[in-house]
Every structure is written in structure tokens, then in C-alpha cells.
Length: 549
Image (spheres, rainbow, N blue to C red):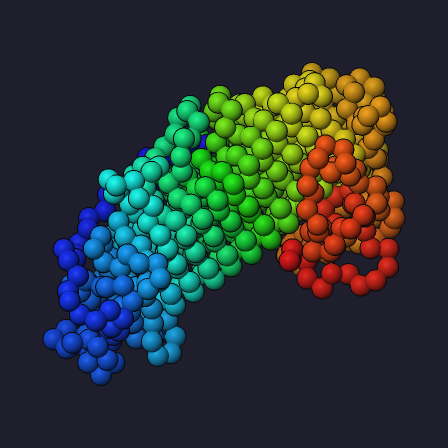
């Protein structure tokens, strides 16, 4: 999936040739009842307009506070020469009761250009007219020439709607960008292309030699109803949360849902709920991604590790009801950059609603190295067309599938578009179960019926000369093929018999893999290693909440 250069919009630095000589830490107030001739330094002497506030060059420690519940037309820009210190940030927020709303017409709501040491908290930002086509609600951008990473940008408790992208953080080069970015407890809704996006320069076939942004954490963010653009035939639109050009990032405790409903039917790439590209050392954990859509014949996944992503992990996540797969690994590159990634302890329920042929887990594209897929639970039922639970059509090296539970009500559990050798794609210790009469594997040009036939013909499901793999009903609490329709329904996928209890391969002993210490629900693994994402419960209460914790 390529990433469009059009996302690197042009920003104009609007103010602050130099910071006035006044005491840092001053608070300034805006109110619809204020007057721009006031000094702005108290609620009783509040300014009236964002235009007046934008004339002020804000020093480290200053605060700009907008009256809660009020609406302020216009935009705010913080430029080079303003803010700039992570230990005494400039704060933009609300005072009084409720959130203030910035209403931006054909412009970003708040721009942060070539500076950092900024906190934006407790405000709403609404776009109108051309803002939906071209602008970011919050747009942080660096095109500095000094190769400096700008440190500390925090966005907390905001609600952003009506823009091309809710929050976008970008850089003109990989040597500059932002470090120590925190986006927390916010709602990004009803935007066009993306709820949240970080980006840097485009890569082509080369392996990334650097990353624009470092230490980026997204926590407690809801990205929903970001619809996409039905006229955008050359790019993906309608994404939830996208990490591009990040070294060391985390998306946690967040949700992406009901995105992509208006994405183009002709686009060569589709949207995804939560995904990354051109990045390394990422963690996506304890998130939910559901009912995300694609207008075209590609993507629409819950989670994705895309081109040039390396050494990154998606764990303890829940995907359900997406048009495409719950979890997707893809590379469009012929380099060796897509390497060392992991999907583990995730749940996918009834994904592939529009495209069941992609499976609940889809591994596809060009060269891919060392992907580990282990201890996931994937259930696919009632599809619009026949499909598989897992599909592999990447040119792979040392990809492994271990300790997964794969369940369907149809015949096909695994589809591999070529007959992979065990050095290319290795399967060990998985459970394969169907409520149909029999299950099959399509392996290149051949179809195998059942585990024994597949094993005998290909050498799959063998470990140190020992037969592995199961064809057992995992005894889910919700029945043979439970359907997750809300996050708490994940508890329906807890095994409640001992058929697979403690049957998981010890990947630490086997191949030196650190499996982590907990299952999807946060229960301690200890010496008990499950097949699938969840430890069996043969007695005791069910998890109170189906969300990963």
C-alpha cells in the first residue's frame, strides 16, 4: 500500500519573529464576550478572537485558554520561535465548564510548525467547507533544515471532526520530525481520509534509512466514522489510525470503527482501522478495530503491518466485522525491510465480511521475512462467499504459524497460493476445526483433506520429528462458532474444556521466542501455554469484560 505524497501539505509560518520580553508562564483568555483591545490576561480582560490570539508570540509556559462551551471561528498557529521547551510547554485549552470549540473554515484548526513543547487539551475542533477536503484539524509539521527532532507534543481530551485528517503529524525529511508525541483520550470522527496520521517522506524500493518521528504513543483514542472519499481513485481514504515513519511507537487501548464507508470503489488501495507503514519497533496492543470498510476490492482490515514495517508487534487486540481480514501483513516492496514482525494473542471474529477470500489473517505481497503468527484465535462463519480462515500469498522467508485456533463453518481453513516449503512458511501446533463435514487446505495447486493428508504431503505440523496440530472442537463458551458483535463478546471465545488446555508449544524452549507473560484477557501464563489467544477455563467465572486488559 503506497502512501500519497499529497499528504505532505504546505504550511505557512504565521507569526513570531521573536518572543517579547515578558515573564514566561502568562495565561491568556478568550471569550465571545471579550474585547481584542483588552490585555487578555484574565477572564475579565479576555480577548475575543483567535485572530487576536494569533498575533501573540507564545513563550514557553504560556497558556491560551478558551471559554468552555463557546465557539471560536478561525485558526491558531504556533510557529518557530514560539514554545520550544518540553519542560515548560505552551498550553492551549479551555477554562470554565466544558470544551471550547475552534471552528476552522478552509484552514487547519491548530497548526504547530517547526516547534514543539506544546500541549493541546480539552478543546473541540470542527472543520467547515474546504477544511474537509484539504486540512488537518491539528497539523504538526517540520521542515527544519537543522536535522533536529522537535521534542514533546501532547494532545489530550480533544474531539476533532470535519477535516481531511483529524490529527496529522508530518515531516519533510527523515532527519527532522517530532519526538515524544502523546495523543490521549480523544475522539477523531467524521473526517475524510484519516482519523490520525503520522507521515514522512515517501519511500520507494529502498529500505528506510531513518524515521521522521520517534517515541509516539496513542492511547485511549477513538477513531470512528472517518468515511473516505468516493472520488479518490488513486489512494486509500477512510482510515482510523495510521503510523508512518515512526521509530518506537505504541497504539494502546484505542478503537477504530465504522471507517471507510464512502471509500472509492476504484481505489487501488483500501483503508484499514489501525495500521503502520515505513516504521519500526511499534506495539499495537489492547485495541479494538471493527466494522471498518473498503470501497474497492482490497484492504478493509482491522489491523495492518504494511510495507517497510519491521520488528513490530500486534498483541491482545480484537477485530470483528471488518470488510477485510482482521489482521493483515503486507509489503509491496522487493526489499528486505518487512522483517521480524509478530501477531500474537489476538482475536478475529467474523472478519472478511466483504472479502472472505482474504481470510481472518491475510499475509500477502512481495518479500516478507520472519513474520511470527502465534496464539491467535480466528473464527470465520456465515461468509458471503467461500473463504479461508488464513490466506498466505506473500513471497515469504521463515514465516511461522504456531499455537493458533482456526475455526470455520465451511470447508477451507488455510489457503496458500503456492506450495511453500517449511523454510518459507512453517505451521506447528495449530488447531483446525470446522462444523462442516471436513476441512481442507489449498496448498498451491493442490487441495488436502484434513491434517494427516496435509502433513504427509508437505511436512507441515511436524516438530522435531513429532506430529503436532489438532482437529479438535476448542469448546468455546459461546458454542462451536460464536460471533463477536461487541467488545465484551470476546468472552464467548474462552475455551471451557481441557481439550486444548496446556497443549500449546513452548516457543521459548523450541525456538527462543519470548511469548510474553499473559493471555488476551491478562491472565498469567506461567507454565500453562494455551493454543489460541485465551487460557482455558474449566471452572471459575468468565472474564467480566471481553476487552483485552
